[in-house]
Image (spheres, rainbow, N blue to C red):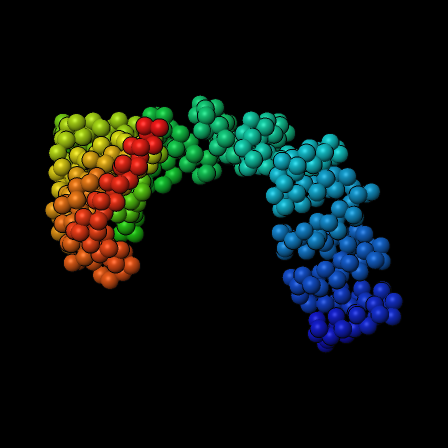
Length: 471
């Protein structure tokens, strides 16, 4: 038996099963499992055979091994539910909760975790269930319920992960509560870097920079806390001593910018902001730092412009719009801010304001074809015929061979009975347009206009309309 491979053992086991010799089959499966304990096919057969022989304790062990290797596979959970149902209600409800979790039924899983807690007298089992229950509440966005469960765990034992999870939940809404939890945690885990880092983060955000320095566990946080206290020389000494690898980092560039800002060296500040932005172009920090530099220099336009960018990156469009409008008022001829306002009004779906600033833009950049066409489309939708024609004519001034615009002008002129203009535009359209059905139709329209046939038809139509109007 010792020299047989897994494949041979499985073949032999199947032969025993076909002969209803399940004990011998079970031994073959156990042998195959000893050869490779990570083989889930063998584990499945072994666990199933154990169930058939009513070796329930063994089956539970093997299905749990299967679950540990394939935690997303529902098979082991369903089998364990049958095994636990009569013998262990705690494990039954825990398994059912985990099954519902992998199936995405998280809200239902919470009910089973509660039932598991109610079906055990073992403190460790209850704590384990509460921990999973709290995590589930957190995922389904029920922070207060999660907090309650974490607090109940802390009534029975100190747990670093629980302290950190609890502090994280408090942090968004109540930093003082988060701080209180972490101060308790650090007394029990004084060497924990995770707790120290969190404490440093809170002290930095609340302005207690001396405490932040005390708990800083990495060079960047230490330097940040020094700079916020304006201990610039000490901070620069640490910045200079960083490794080359640490200097190739967005945080290094941001801290260097902050150092030079403290030293009133605006050129170097802006230079390092540029470097930082290359590392992290989507971060609002670069815009915020630029705004602060220009604010100090009393540059009104630049200050409002970069505060606008900052708020936009923070997804606060209302404040961004206020700042952009202030920037525009400071320099109404600057096309950069006009384009930013056009984009922002587009995001806000304010088409009239968008059109207003498009007009301001083409009054400055008269050859901006894309924006002029945008205005044509907007005023067509609004039915402003005169505006449409004005901007179509502006397009022709930019490119007299723009046959699509020439055709539109011809049709608008014809519609408004400016026949001489229509003839002129149709002739130019036919001259420049490639061959197409549209071009052939234009030739027909031109012929009717030049022969007077179209005017006669429209005259007869007018008489008919007037006749019916009298009746």
